[in-house]
Length: 277
Image (cartoon, rainbow, N blue to C red; front, top):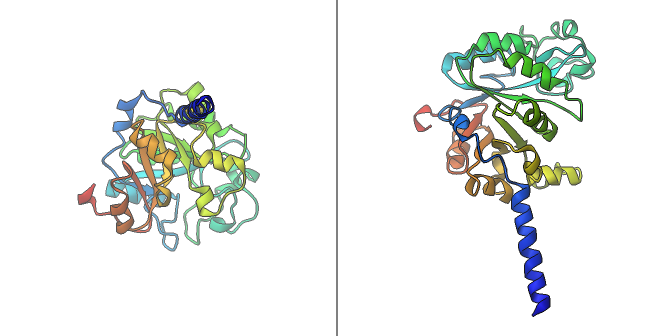
């Protein structure tokens, strides 16, 4: 029986450690509520075959006009200017070689987006355009450990009067905000890396299962809606009442299927039925 008790104690201890590891921030709940009740247009209300491609000023204008919140991506140029662009590389959207961080802002602003007349916008100009009319989900793009985008973006947002939150796949970004901007609503982005076939090592397993929440203390978890059944994500919402964000919803059918699993929805490639939100 002694051996059985030891096994039980070990199992219970491991379970408690797991629950502690995935525990998000339990306070700051009031600040999260302001983001509910609106759909968020993924990279703006865009169509890459139109005059309003992703992460363009025109796509953001359209989202504001229709009353949608906006999800967008920010990284820094070679000379430290925060710009709105999703990929680390330029080839898919601008048909140019190299990465965003290889070029200065003066160089980047000459690149056209997806055959349109739109160019890569400065984050500062996007903030001026939106001007608090709709809420923003700002994803900070940090490939490894260079966190210079965090203070650069935070300096701009300190003077911004509209509603915004930040999110990132990189937990170091959340750590930075926990230390220097703890009042800002922050979210951990994640995916079913193992299930989706994108598994590249131990770090992806840790991120899929939200095992650094104890350290980063996110206010919300933004997860690929296709992998809503991942236990850590479900526990964060059900046990800890953490706000759950779904990315990226691409049809009304996907939206309807995700309603009872998430609280906020980032959409792309269709127009949601507003009556159901």
